[in-house]
Image 1 (cartoon, rainbow, N blue to C red):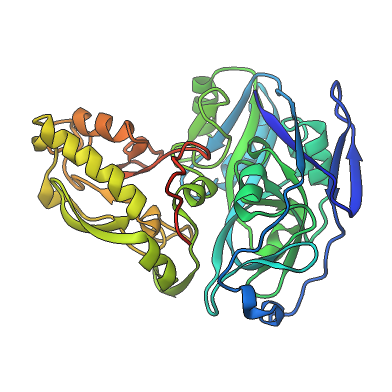
Image 2: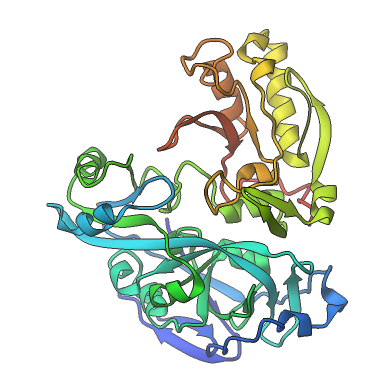
Length: 419
């Protein structure tokens, strides 16, 4: 069942929304704060810059809500072309379209409602924060009434957090997200990941341009037909490769259904601060690198640097292939490595290589399924057993690229990530 997170008990402005057929929902938040000057984060005392403040968690009550059948998510690589966003609503059988804009904003710090620091990036660095801009009116047919009302009431300096993001960030309604450049967003509510595409934060689409959120990354569509039928119709609107998935095919409707959400990556492997250094390259906070990136010998692949949790998975896969007499599944000469601190090439999204949770194996070899191929079944199956997915399944295929693909809560938390 799909869960809607409802938080009660925080002293501030109370917003009440009734849900048809369910008990009334109380969503607590506070008024939007004015945008602070760029120096606002520097004015926060430095005593907690490297520590995490303790945040008291409010009581969480859950209800269930299932939208009608017939919902699909439509996406392409990087951004939906205008011809697709403009044309979806005119397709026969389509009666609702919600186009969502997505961007990684740069977070400088977070504070509680009473001003205590929870997280702060080192000077000169910022934390990537995946933010979705949602049109509440268009989203209203998909999301429960309480969520649609909350999204519809968002002011220009307000945001909601997904449940996973709120848990990771240790924030409650009333908290502040201080962005690089001086803008501050006030958290006014927390909702289930499902309704905001597993975003770290969601804002009103009316304020997207001011925040620099411009890319239409996915559309949620209500269609009277099948995945194949909607796919064919959508492909007729653009030259780009279109991906269509139904609600039973993916965990959460978002722009990359074959890639773990950024909040899932952070929950599993930790969060770092970074700064661009030119082109596709970035510098990651050295303290995070020291705590999480290790150099080890990997069976069949050789010596390399990866995230300490990911390399344990990679070593297990490779050792298993070797022990099973399937070493021929790996071409060591076509191994291009794991950790690489950069953006996705020619994009503004951070590569999973920046976390050290992706590996390029048999890269460049013919994806014909033969030994040494990036699509050798023995390799694919061994990787998948540890939640490592091959990029050959993507809309823009990347045979030989393997990265962790899991959901929040699927990780073994006995050894939490550092940083």
